[in-house]
Image 1 (cartoon, helix red, strand yellow):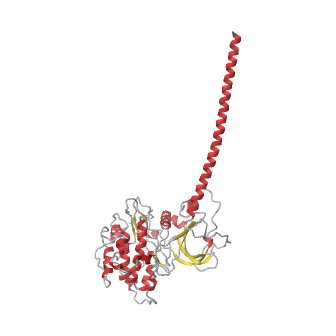
Image 2 (cartoon, rainbow, N blue to C red; image 1 turned 30 degrees about the vertical axis):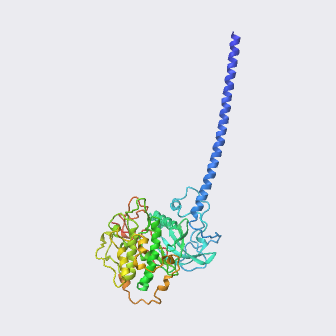
Image 3 (spheres, rainbow, N blue to C red; image 1 turned 90 degrees about the horizontal axis):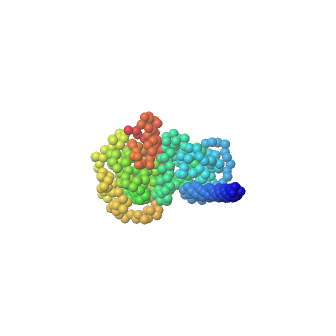
Length: 464
C-alpha cells in the first residue's frame, strides 16, 4: 500500500507540473501576442495620426492657392524692412524654422491655425516696393513676388509683441478667419495667404491701390447721384454676401471701403465682424459712433439690420457732406441722439426716399435685405448683374482734374478712423481689450487694421 500511494502521489505531482507548464507557456504566448498587438496598434495609430496631421496642416497652410514656388534666397544682414522702394527683398525675419518641436512656444501656438508656421511661401519671396499704410500692430506693404513682377499684392505685417501686449490675438485671428472664409467676391478684399515667423504675422492680400473711399470722396467734393447708385449697389451686394453667411460687419463707413483701378469698391477691415449665433442676434456695443445704429447705441439686441442703417448714413454723407443725425461733441454711445433727422435736400425724391427708408429708427421697419434695397425707385434703370460682373467702370463718373477750392466737406466730415467698444456679451467671439483702469493713452487702439489706407491708423477704445 505505501508503494502504491507513492506512485499515485508521483503521478499527481507530474500532472500538476504539466498543467503549470502549460499555463506558463500560454501566458508567455499571450504576453508575446499582446506585445506584438500593442506595437502594431501603436505603429498604426502613429502612422494614421501623422497622415492626418500632415493632411490637416497642408489644408491650413493653403488659405488660397496662389501657385508660388518657394525659392532659396540669400540672407541679408539688415534686420528691418524699409518702407521705400528697394531692388531686393528685405530680410524681415529668418527663414521659417524646419525643426520646430512640439509643444510649440506660446508666441507661435497662440496664432494657430490661422497663421501656419511652415508655409509654402514666406516673406523672402517678395520684393518690397512701398508702404500702403501703418497701424497699431505694424504696416501694410506693397509687394510683388520674385517670379512675377507684374502682379502686386498688399502684405500686412503685424508685430506679435504688440498684439500680445494688448491681448488682441483673438481679435486678429477672428478677422483673418472670417475674411478668408468669404472666398471670392468682387466687392470684398480677398486674402490669399497667411503665415507667421518668430516675431511677426503675415497676411498676403489683394492690393487695392487707389486708397480709401473717404479720401476720394473728399477730393471730389462729394459724389453725383449716378455714381452713388453704383456704389450703393456694390456695397449692398457685399453686405448681402456677408448676411447670407450670418456675418454682420458692424463698421460700414467711407474709411473702411477701398477703391480699385476701375473705381470699383472693396470692403475691407473685418475687425468688427461677428458671426451670429443660432438666435441670430448680438448685444455687443461696438462700431463707429457717427455710423452706429440706434439699437446698438441703446444696448438692445440687434441683427444684420444695423449694417443697412450704417449704409444709409454713408450714402447720405456721400451726397450732402453732412451726418444725418447730430453727432457734434459725442464721446460715447450714451451721447447719441436720433432726433432732429431731416431728409436730405437738393436731391432727387427717389434718393431722399431711399435714405429715409434706410435710416428708420425701428429696425423692423427699416430696409434690411438686398432684395428690398435694390427694388427702391432710386435704382430704376440700374442693371445689378452688369455691376456685379464688373462691366461698369465707376471711374468714368469721377470728376476729372478736380481742383479743390471748397473745404467745407473736410470741416463738416472728418476722417473717422476710430472704432468704439463699450461692453461684450459672453456669447460673443470677440475679446474685450479694454482695461477699466488704464489711461486713455494706453487705449489708443483696438486691434483693427486697415489693409489699404495710406494714412496712419489709430483706433480709439473708450472705457465707460
